[in-house]
Figure 1 (cartoon, rainbow, N blue to C red):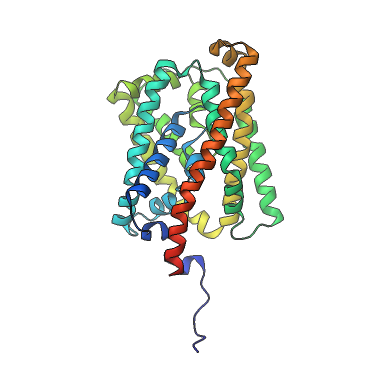
Figure 2 (cartoon, rainbow, N blue to C red):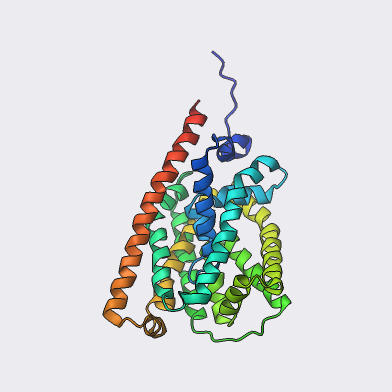
Length: 314
């Protein structure tokens, strides 16, 4: 019996990070990725959240960062895999921009609660994923520090009231800020755009398909992601547990910070026009709906994850 098989490390097992590319394609799997893309696209422009957080939750962050960090590796297979994600992201951004421009302002707090419900519903899965390669006390310290830092940043940012005149360079910088929210899950670019007085103008520009808005936004986003993706990919390869606990801390801290900065504010209650008791009930119902929807979606995701595991076992 042969005993010459070398011990395998993550870097020596290229197929270990490519399981999603080798899974059997189906209409169901394609639609699941489309729905994930829509959710991530909404996360790009939904105040309080980031597309990166939702990409982590829906298990596309790691493969996306690895692809962008080494774009020539299995290029065609990766492009084929991410096409529905990209289509969904564009749909999510455009449709939600229309909603923002039309009526989102009134029910902003409730919609944010819906997406926070998504986060809460998937937290157990994120915790397991963070500890997949082991969990040491230093990783819990990383989690705690990152949670406190993003909480403090969002709380401080919530006190800012700036107005930056829109221009092509400003929209390029805004796109780069959104791209940073992809690379650093937990950071909410939309919150900063609100602080700078650019959020509503961005939503209207996307809704109206204004090229002076969406082109520099897109270029800035892509430039930022491509610039930092390789560094993020290297960090995952060399410090997997530390990176995931950092991300998990960012998710926790930003989620908690959303309530005092976006949801439970006098402005949010006044805009809803429901009165405080009904406002709280509505937000709680949306939060619960998000948790239930997240749980149901995870069941669909587990089905396809099971198919990938079956392939690996075979």
